[in-house]
Image 1 (tube, rainbow, N blue to C red):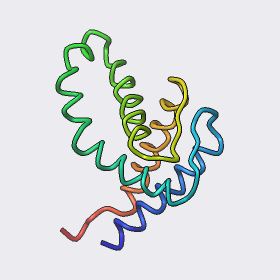
Image 2 (image 1 turned 60 degrees about the vertical axis):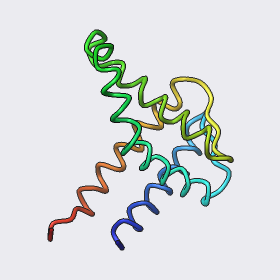
Image 3 (image 1 turned 120 degrees about the vertical axis):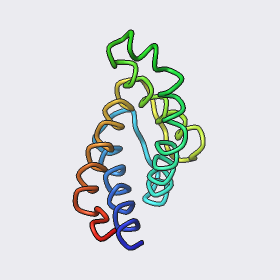
Image 4 (image 1 turned 60 degrees about the horizontal axis):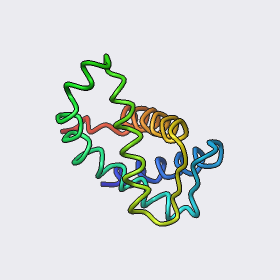
Length: 116
């Protein structure tokens, strides 16, 4: 449980850093970035797999590039539900989602459940 909390706090910090350096992404406060981190976890767990399944034929036709569009859609879905989180354009949320995915992967190496 402690690893979960630390991981999401660090992802929230990464969201704040990403919002500071990527034009087109804005987060009002650290509390908002915590909500965005939790929403991203929820959306990536429950909604993204459904969209990937539905869009599988399009993803095959575009040689996997449509998966990038799905990532952008996920950021826009989160933007719609979290006040204080604003997104503009296509490339900023693409870079943002890539960066957060990278941070999440790195944190998963450090906070893996090896004792299970």
